[in-house]
Length: 172
Image 1 (cartoon, rainbow, N blue to C red):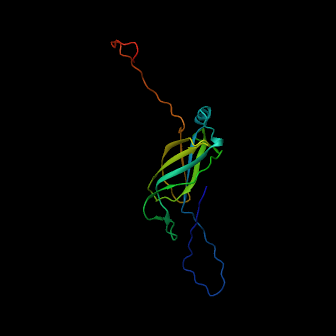
Image 2: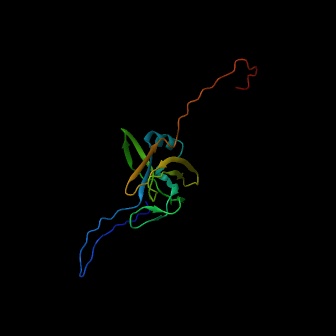
Image 3: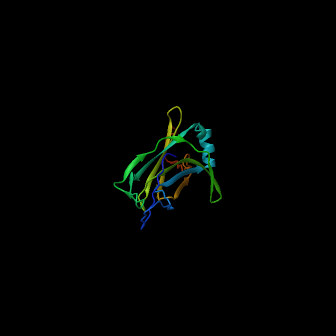
């Protein structure tokens, strides 16, 4: 994880000599974590995508780049930021009784009560990559927002219907 900052205030203080003051510092950044199922990791590994040998990076659409140091609120225009690639963490988290493996995590400055779109790219050493939209994250100061799903492989159910009246043996 690549960034963090803190803010804090002391009000109604006047001093005529040295004085010690305790200040509680807060971070304006929220942490975004993206996880996928262990089964998903195993299937992807069988297809040549070994997470231990890969890097991940996130792109956040709707993030902020400036905050008010008095109250920690994001200010300015919404923007798209691309975070630098990092090694994929090996952290396992149990969510609702199911185990998930972390794919990406970083601190992001977000606008309060406004979601941002999170896209993750997993990079292999041979320049192949997997890119997926992880969903929307609400990045509140000092909070962790967890996105979890089956991101690497998605089972698809479909039906095949064969037209019995079609008179060619070569075409479905």
